[in-house]
Length: 267
Image (cartoon, rainbow, N blue to C red; front, side, top):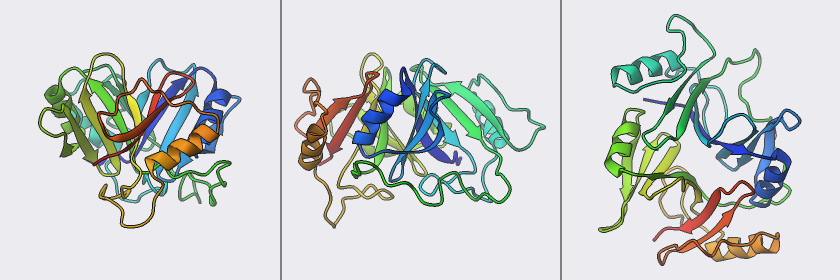
């Protein structure tokens, strides 16, 4: 099942304050309405949305018919109504549903076993427009390549969560060593991690030194965790030393709304 472009929609209290934080991480605004309380940000192939006062929890967001890395519309894709039908047949409970007899723009919603909202939102393609990214992305005020993005979810039951996301077309492609309780799942360009932990400890995770597409180690120079940490400290951000990277090369920061941002170089 192809779900389209993947992003995380962050529930924030102050868009301007959050924008300032994420600009220091190398993100740039590519769309939205700051006065209306929302912005779309990009850093290389990673997309996040900032939404003030629109929902209570961060939301996994998918856009059928939109290619994630390029943000260009696709000609052949799974329509949101076909995705809806497949999920219902697989026993997934949906909140908002699309009109099965409709066409064009529509959306559906779901909530995973750990309470994470999921939005699958299909857009109409405006005439003469081939994508949602500007023809030329604006230069970030503070460019920084953090590496590929993973949204890491805290779950109560690893197998239950993995089975749930399997219904959305996610398959396991990486697992922790013996004794570690985490797995990484993938659907196209979307990668999510599942780790056993209590509470809402979801983390925006970046992996410098890995290739965006294959997630294999790069054979070319890249910014190391230590270099990224030094740059971000120089930009006025303070690392969260309470995060234990378990011996891995990692550093964490916390955004204005308490979201943990982890820069992690896997072994």
